[in-house]
Length: 418
Image (cartoon, rainbow, N blue to C red):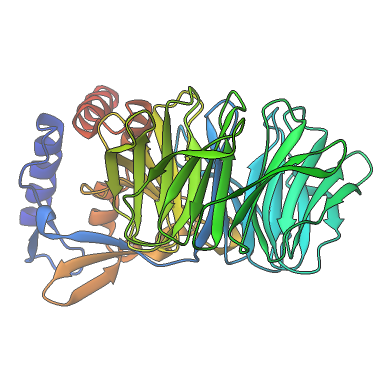
């Protein structure tokens, strides 16, 4: 017994003195004699459900993730906690979007419908019905009064005050996979399995231009911040940057070894993100057409990518069931977010495995001791006490992935309060 507490005291002293996470020993709760090296243990979070779409709030303080399990998770990016789980979709969620004021959200689903959510209450304001198959993409207009959705062979433009379709834009011959509003809200883009990108005039409902150049299904489209150019991602493994005045390809960005599932412009329009079925996120310099950084960490297809409003971070969603927040300056992953049923969620820092979890979320975290020994972390109180560090998570998020600084400050604060 005395040996056990001696080692616990030693661990606390070492953590407080060393932000570099050097070797530390801590006893397992099921034995007074066994001492395990923390650096030889690995935390494993259970797989949940494929993440199909992610979005940053306009102020960059929160995020949305939409999953195959039919839920939308609203995450607090200052703490890593789930603020609310929106559970009104009975089918998989294909697409999510914040309103311009950040107070409401849209989700498209595999039940041919769109849900418009009030985030403060978690209630559905309205359900928009009109598609004949899966809704693949949803987005708010810049003024938040209307919305676009893509699914089946059509793009639908919705009036959110009435829930009615203003116009149905029907020029694609196959499934529409992605839609986007221009910055002024007067035109729209759509990408389709028919391998084309269409640029629409919303007032007339007519196609301004059809952008043809991909040899595979178009899976993603985006407008530049000035509305003069566009991006498209395709199953031909390429990202194309289009000049909308001429309809010509300015650059073809060729760096993915698998289908491109997602694209996004940076807030300044000078760089772009893409995500693909090679499990990577690419950050591109558009002027040169070169990859600035490849963000590698996902173990499944990257389905969605988005820049933070200040352009310094990226958020990605994947079929590996995670949403990952990245520091673009360093190219390092800041935190890994995993949502579960009944509003449960886990946020974990890569490599060092410090985590925060919602109530009951720890049931989904396992600790691998090596030698084929695995146990649920809530059954090992000493390990739980060591790795469950909401204070470190908050500082990691505040310092955008500077783990050493976060640990040092968290342990200093912890020492001052003990």
